[in-house]
Length: 469
Image: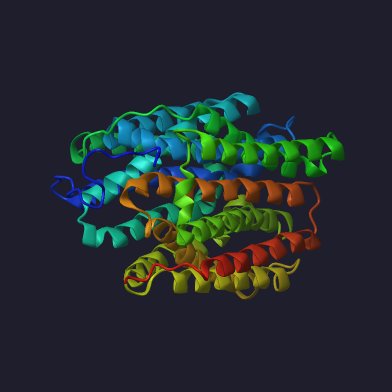
């Protein structure tokens, strides 16, 4: 059976932990880089209005590609990045990805135009994709097998926390220092992690046989995701006819079908379709796509509502969304410990339904007059607990039943699926709310989709089976 990863040495499950004095040092170094990647993906939700004011000649749909160009490239590159880390060394690829990410962050902050900013975001996404799977492999190798379930949950919780606090931190940074500092903030932490990785992280296993990256599959995947996102974003634009929108969307769907057919018959595809022989893996990835879409819709929608309906300033809006994200990390830690004994399904189903309740609250309760404590905070707290229950559990459940030789690429595809959901969520939100003079009823469709996607996530997680045998 051909796979993007073919290990000739010990498998991850059999290999001993890396010879490091403290595995937690390796964990925090590797996780700090992933924290930056996840943080950067959502900080711009808060900076979106500042970008619109800075680049006044650009449409909202064009500006959405500052978010989506990053996410599309990141999602597509995650899958081959796992194979590159195995082929060239996890530490080496981690350091390369981190260096590219830091340099591109500086270029983003210095970008003189929207086009330059989008180009720098593409390079930044390549660096982020290189370091993410390598980070997980480094963390896994640093700990003994019996502690890996907890460590995976913590690693996922770090990314989930960063994605959750990104909008509130971004609002503060953007209001006080300007949108370029949403990128410059990556530099000091990134340089620290790069410096520390030189002596604190060691290769767990020798690099395996090198394989060429499936460039055709990579391009087909990016074309599929990018075209569908473009069709959604431009669906309400007067510059595009219905026929043009339908052609772009149809092209994206055809590219997706071509990607599957190419993977089925190519000798070394970007994604080995045999991964989906595992039922739990199939259902978890479908759930990840649904929840990833709802997650990005929620946060971008929060800022549209706070600034457009309640007329909060950007710092006020950032502060207003903070209590929910603060619940993500402790909830994820507790969930990770219990999932090792009970499996992930109770937390996936329960967390998704709680997340649906938060959407229902936002649909029915907040009105045009600000009443934060009674009308907003309860829904926000429900969403924070729901995210803490679901996001780390999706990461853990995705790989829990995979063979060891498919672990890295399986984890990478699950992360890519979440990012693709993020692209669709941003596109849907901009399509629904990316116009001037918002009114309260404009948000009804958004919250209705939020509820529907959360319930769909719960239904998809019902067949998931990860309880220890």
